Image (cartoon, rainbow, N blue to C red; front, side, top):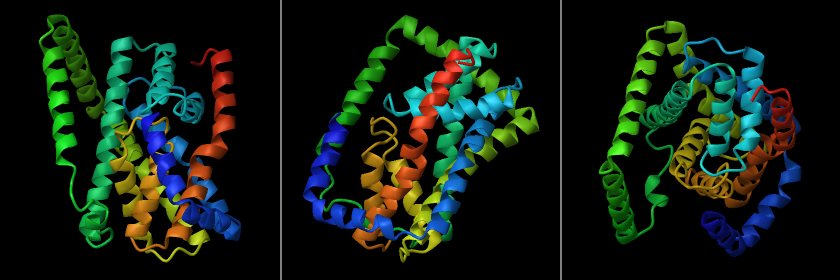
Length: 299
């Protein structure tokens, strides 16, 4: 709840800009928004492609895509992607995979998704080094004290867990299974292409949606710079434990778009509509799909 509270405080302090941005929502050009909606629909097959690439067994295609659509709704019930992970673990269990192999496949998916997103961001930054002035995003005085405390706490927690023999045994067993599964998947070119192709396609499609929404509002920022802003914002908030990134993603995107050269009010309108297309409009049908899949014992 703390990140949501902080975002609410920022929204209240910037209420004039927020109100102006919301007022611009009705000025969007609909052909661009329809194209953005169509591109959004391709993100679920891309996620399904990555999920399929993480396992050797062939998963039922239609049910896999429907599960990714439903997982998007579940992702907004629990923090940091736990909802989507739980749905996919259950789906793989119903498909006959053991808990160990399902967990290994989930870990491989998360690794590929993270590497794909960061790799795409790095490639764009190499191609367009001036796309996003990161100096404008950082405070004048970095909060070194809290960061050091957080790092020390993390080291102590990891060290404490590593000292427990049972934890070491479980972790070692999981790592062996995960490495074995990763080797098996990459031994089959079709699975490797599906895994890494989907991992690159998903963030690229999401960035494309943001570009199309920005064009709908006439935001004066080059498309490549918009893509860099999206990837940088989503990478930065990846560890913020809000369900589906609610609040944190919106705040980070507005800041990134303004830093990339956009005006505050149009940038706010772009982010509101972008999140409407990618999160809020699919939420109810996704929840209904989730309920139907549970009733059908697909998950």
